[in-house]
Amino acid sequence: MTAVSIRGVSKQFRAGITALTGIDLDVEPGEFVSLIGPSGCGKSTLLRIIGDLVQPTAGTVEVNGKPANRARRDHDYGIVFQDAVLYDWRTVAKNISLPLELLRWSRGRRDARVDEMLELVELSAFAKHHPWQLSGGMQQRVAIARALSFSPSLLLMDEPFGALDEMTRERLNAELLRIWQDTRSTVVFVTHSIPEAVFLSTRVVVMSARPGRIANVVDVGLPQPRTNATREEPRFFELVTQVREHLIASGAPLGDTSTPTLVEEPA
Amino acid sequence: MSAIVQPVPVGIGRRVGRHALDWIPAVIIFALGIAAWQGLVVVFHVQDFLLPKPTSIATAFWHDKHVLWSEGVYTFKEALGGFALGSGLGIAVALVFAAWRPLGGVFMPYAVAANAIPIIAFAPIMNDWFGLLNPFSKMAIAALLCFFPVMINTLRGLTSVHPSSVELMRSYAAGRARLFRHVRIPNALPHLFTGLKVATVLSMIGAIVGEYFGGPTSALGVSILNASSYGRFTDAWAGIVMASAFGILFYALVAMAERLTTSWHPSARAFRSE
Image (cartoon, rainbow over all chains, first blue to last red; front, side, top):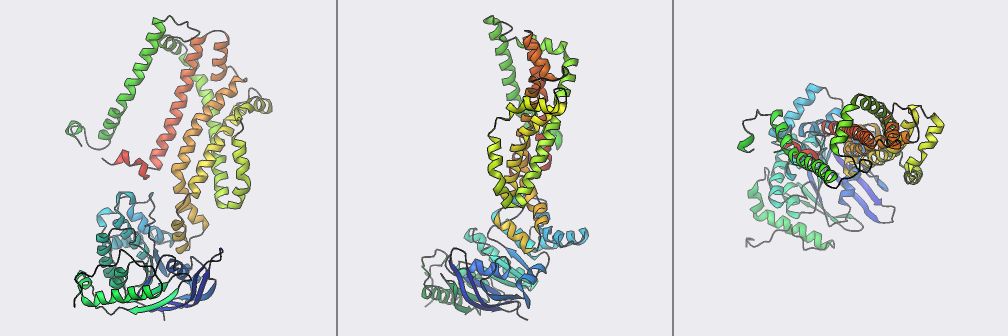
């Protein structure tokens, strides 16, 4: 059973803007798929359509073989936004347990799971802190722990590290890969960083702007587990170049600072 | 932490100690102000009916303390009743407007227009409607004054929620009731308290001004009015001191409740992190 199945999805906003057109995409269980494209290519909208937070104008979306609406109501996915969206009135531990409370888990079961999640994102020492006492990277780790707390099979991530500095981003990339392998979940990840997409994904979906459509799909065959050494492999650079060329071919204006300078490119 | 405060036992004692230190400048300014007042009145031979000496006011206050206290309690009860009524209604209306936005859109212009009315002008009407001696006539004025600031602040708190917050709750398949309970209402608390603090002051104003237009002699406003009518200005000032004391106490109580319920708020971090 496919984790996500998108058939002929289009989205037109009321102002007459076509955000997406003719999207077909299948994501298999256990895959890590990145959606990459220029601003306004509708990648965040597509993610929200998968999550049944936005309704498509045409086409169908199935998650775990169910209509997206059913999947949302069954808590089949967890979502992480660019902002951590943590609640200031809740401690870190309480933020993580929010979905469990909504699912009416018992107190004991909740506490045990929260401890487990805190360990997973290495924030056990901060359980009783309030979100505003944490750095941006730590807040985003709490958001990831919250999204995974009820063990959804699918994780939707909308530029979760977009607001973080490069160092933090790379560290969280590695951490996310570890979590992905530990939890054996499926991830759909929206980003505008080419190296991030290549480093994380099993497949990179390159989208073009206005109207947003899938321009190309790049299979990333880099071996797992990936480490910082992966970022220095020739194959990594080749894939980055490949994705960038697809982006250019699809009409994306480049000059993107997130593209690494290939000073040390091997001959 | 500096070495100076270290001998004080850790925990609450240390925090109170720090707070006491924080208050010292304010206390000094207060003392200086009173001293300057006293000095100026004595040096320039200001007549009592213009501005009595603080010492005369203190003497009058001490002399009448039992009467002033019972009058203050009477008026404070009116203010409290009006505060509860007006704030309760304000919170309820804000919840309704936040839950059904179109309704808010229809009624908000009227609410804003109504707020521009000098509500205190209705005091004689309220006395007429509910009876001069009925405390409810003063509560009604106080309630009218409290309603708007509480309503508008609460509404802002309920609606100023990050769109992603709403999406997050939707992703959990949480309905409107849970969105209110877990997101909108906690988010509104700091705003609500801003409104409530304004309302404490307004409710005292409402009750006392209402009494100026007539009320039982057991009320502080009536007592202040009578004292000044008969030229007993020092007594009038003593009444004003009592009214201020109740006003400040009321404000402080609400501020304390705020501190207790919204200690999580980033604006409270100055009080908890060192």
